[in-house]
Picture (cartoon, rainbow, N blue to C red):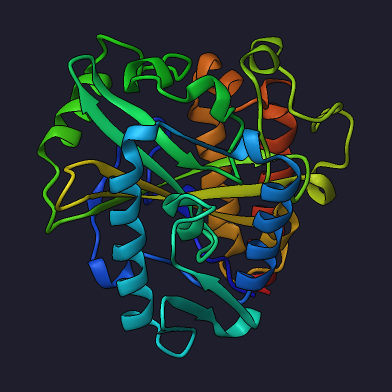
Length: 313
């Protein structure tokens, strides 16, 4: 029983930038949930379009650049899954054909309909890098409407240690400025949530109140049965023509209980418990689990102890 991504194993430190070079051939992740994720996107675009898509009119050419780059990558890297013919791309496992023309849809929206990743276009002006367009169906506890057209400093203002003037904010801006077309980068982070929803928005008001997008959250639940580990794989890639940066976000969700049966569950559970214990009060509040930190650590420690005993028996 495998876990696709485990940044909580000690390979990544929470609330650090943690960028590493990305092989362009591994830019987009595709797994056996492709069809399900694409279907969820279609439902969201039909029912909640204004909450999951936004774009400044001046970004249309850059959006087209994203679509062309993505189409070339998919049909070259995954020809068994994606086939292009006469302005149409076929997603073979989904039995679906997507027209690559940009009417009535915008190019970024078309691109989003091809992959499990969310797509965010960042553009620089005199104020710095800002979020200029996004197809964001699966947000991790944030709201597109609150971040649209905002600068990096404004976007990261609620994140402990990343607000304007901090060392991390300066490093991020420098990294965006210096990102090379030939060398995309990636990073991983994790959070915990109370269900297996990919679409997990959270407004500033909800965050300030310390509650999740749905009532209840983790408090009072069976934490082992009702908690899910949410991992974000993020990539940054500078577009060669516009100079804009495409930020992709791929979500992996695993039930916490999977650690109890995973071959490496003892180490993974112990490491996640250690990371929870090491987070500051501000960081744990930002992750929305302040009320559950100690209980979660107990659950994870128990998993680690049981797995270790089973391994030694």
